[in-house]
Length: 88
Image 1 (cartoon, rainbow, N blue to C red):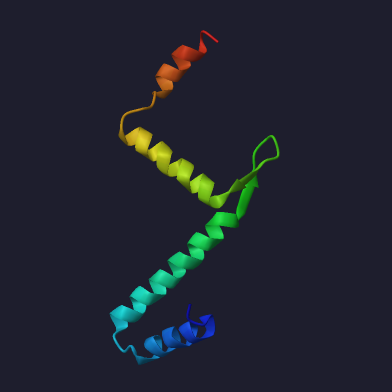
Image 2 (image 1 turned 30 degrees about the vertical axis):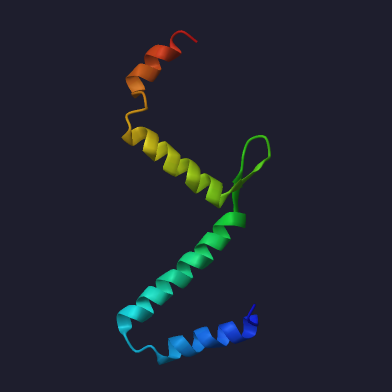
């Protein structure tokens, strides 16, 4: 495998030779995404009532799954929840 230092230098050289504004913007976006993804895997954003840490990537995955369920019609209305809660 090629030396990591050499690979980094090649990337730097590639970026320095790039003059297209759109290409630079795409590279910036990609580097932001990589950084964001890495941060999301380990960043604690809160704690559950039982003290278990909530990791950002898990939280985002839960939101995506919830939105998918809502889009598929898998939800109940507030009125339906009120009716159900009468029998609790």
